[in-house]
Amino acid sequence: MLKPLGDRVVLEAEQEEEKTVGGIVLASNAQEKPTTAKVVAVGEGRVLDNGEKLAPSVKEGDRVLFDKYAGSEVEYAGVKYLVVHEKDIVAIVD
Image 1 (cartoon, rainbow, N blue to C red):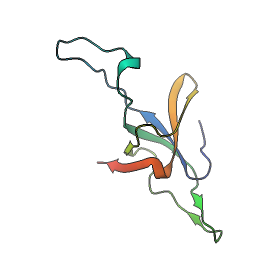
Image 2: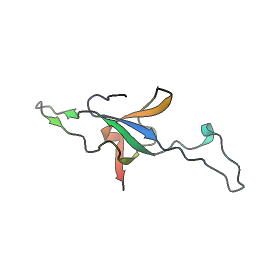
Image 3: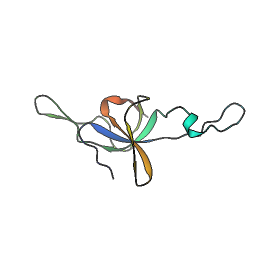
């Protein structure tokens, strides 16, 4: 599995099939980019200026809301993931 470094977080985006009012299914490239995802892996945290390590505020298994155009898409073992900085995560969804 991917092991993120520093304050990075690996997310697995939740894909939802989007339909128009008439029932037409939109192609994936025509849909809005998802903004919720499941946390798959978390880095060790950010190192502060004084050398202390600030632990991440999210953990594996959390569902989160993130900035729309944040992060980098990567593919590992045939699955697409999104790697973002913890600051790009807006909220934890309960």
